Length: 213
Image (tube, rainbow, N blue to C red; front, side, top):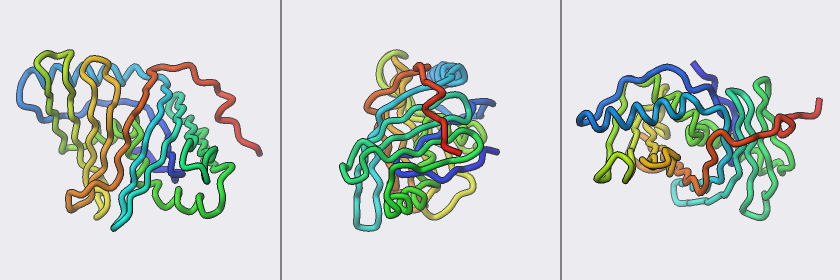
């Protein structure tokens, strides 16, 4: 069972993609595309991405753009690009600890408080939930296997009022994630991650994850 880590609002950790999940689709096509996605992400060793995060509150909506760099199952760095007042704030994880750097104390408090929900917006973390969940679904759109998108849906355990399920929309041709969305118990969107770019097995330098002792 993976351990959730606190995150800054950029949030990004990567965990090993392993195991298989049973899934519910409507036919052979859904099963075939799901297996294609499954094998693709099983082989992922690293990635970089640019992600727009939309965080919805009771009567508020905040948007952040981040850069994410991930290597292996324990190393990750998330850098905030905007808004300007917290630009450059980073969260780095090396497998032993997580550090927030270049951020103000107010920014850090916001990041950590949002972390448990926003952590699910990481591509690899989403799949860990998906593979271990007993309640999943697959829905495919498009006329051919290389057109349209596939929507993966999974319950989130342990479940809480503000995190009940999550979905990932995947491009059928590139297999890159398009969006990850987290919903609360009432079916309302809590967090949406829009992947503006995604580089599969990108070269990520280990020095990015070094921390001062």
